Length: 431
Ligand code: ACO
Image 1 (cartoon, helix red, strand yellow):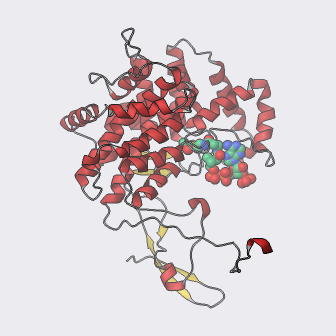
Image 2 (tube, rainbow, N blue to C red; image 1 turned 180 degrees about the vertical axis):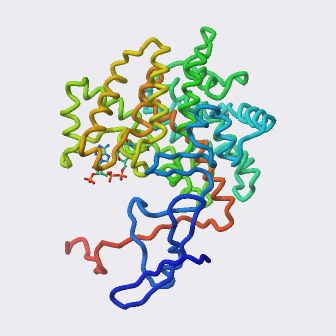
Image 3 (cartoon, protein in one colour; image 1 turned 30 degrees about the horizontal axis):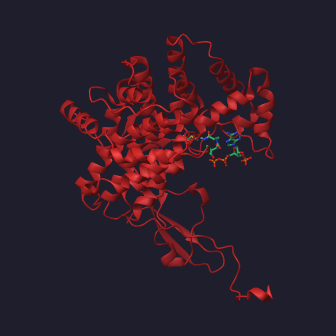
């Protein structure tokens, strides 16, 4: 019960319904409509969840108008400057920054779960060499649910925690195996002496033929990208994980569902689509033509990496990534990278264009991330896989938070039915 109320009055009957207004620690007040159907026999209508808070959460806060993003209260800028991905993963899962001992324990636990059951590797033989790595990810991550039966009692918090550890630990191993399958090289097993992202780089780029040294710059750049991608409150893939998990589904299957949702070009697939787009644009001289296409509502072309459902200001992650782009490309002696030049020029021109200003369309996290990934040698088809690895920390945190909440129920939206009314079956010979 809340002291603040909203009253909804129906113009046809004059009937009024009082609804509680809930206040979070930050962000807009939220009208609690759970009693609405019971009181007034009406649903609310909000396709795409534009005005709907689907759950309570204490993990991530976004103020889209101010360009603010915080994990567990900590500004993304501070985490990006001072933290590591593994520490951020701990923060998301457990709610607090770890002590030195907690962090060391967590690192050890994650490291000790990085191997996957060897039978899983045989799954790859069923995929064609040119299978998209996200297609393999969806399949192989989902097939984790056929293993690890010792800890899938989702009513047991300890089992949930073990599943979360396994997911954070094993997804990079699966991701690297997807890449190795594409390039036809043998799978490289994890190495426990390496950090989370260094280990991933080695599993992707080492071969059995020679020693592989992790480049500290590449490791730090990837770690930073992972911090920035680790969570983003109730986005499409996270909401998919929650919805799948709300029925009590197997945790690995839920994360496979989130991975599938992430793949779309309107979501995590945008990083790959940005580089396709930049290549399609080809050079600064063609920017105006493509901006005109993006503004033409009869043309399906959109500026990929631009716009966001929540940010109506510069995405704070894009700001950080653009800066890292400079550093990475400079250190890799690639500071005249033509795609980066083109991306910056495109941003500059779009940021002065009436259409983009009026619709508040700014670069999002994916506008520059692909340029860094490509500079690190990651192929375009693996960009969204990188995103999935990082976002797994967020997905499992949301999945655990939901199941920890004693009020959680199966997610079951309703609909505004627009189909045919009742009609009688017509036999085949009479149609
Ligand atoms: N280029 C051109 N026009 C755009 C763009 C764009 N990138 N994004 C939005 N618009 C226009 C739309 O045409 C629409 O115009 P209208 O009001 O005249 O119809 C208006 O801006 C609002 O756009 P919607 O699609 O209604 O906004 P929504 O919040 O549903 O979509 C989305 C947000 C999907 C991110 C959209 O901006 C988009 O498609 N961007 C490109 C893809 C992309 O970068 N996705 C990554 C998002 S970040 C992430 O998931 C990690």
